[in-house]
Image: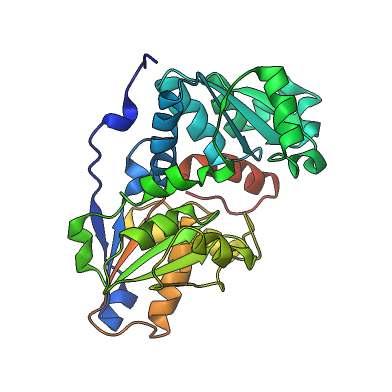
Length: 315
């Protein structure tokens, strides 16, 4: 297949930025953030990593269409739409919530995620939450194939063996200098890649963005090493849940470091990580690398919700 822009063949160089905060100095801990968020404005962080080998596989299979799933505010939906367009693929998004189809123009006008995906050529199929739960069933996929024709299926959140392979490329040989690798977790693909690529002396800590015990089982499907654990105390009530202290933390962290965090994933990780430092969970002299997995494009939609409630927005 001819491509408009062979985006994934570009050489990606990602910097590790050291963070200077009083609590880190007090506890004698060195913290760096790997700026995966700087790869691309919309196809950044783990979205770039997860899509890379999936799109290459789609091309190897001579597919012309990518089909994936997501909620109305899914960063994965935007990333698939844009990456697909850049690489010459038609894209289809199966979106949870059939009520969004009632007034499509209103939905597109008010929902910046779907608006951006639509601008980049993605076609939508809005389905009820009940039907969405059956989205991987043979019957449902046959119905979608009958409607849209042949396609390459990119899983919700992008996690599969090709995504893991991409996430294994996040760490470089220079990153072996760190004692701990930290990342936020949604579907478990990113941390699985990090675990596989980590050194024997390193420990990997995952900070789930949602409340659920299933993640350990999901991660274990893709890894052999046991140098990792999940820190489950910082999900703030569940996926996309938050409170005023998290929003305040995001704004204070940006003021002190110039780095913007997203409220769904990286902010929860960084809040939890700094709380662990405060509580002496790390020895003096420890070097930590935290992965910024991107997702910043979702802040605009998030702020719309905050404004409607007259609450503090993310700066």
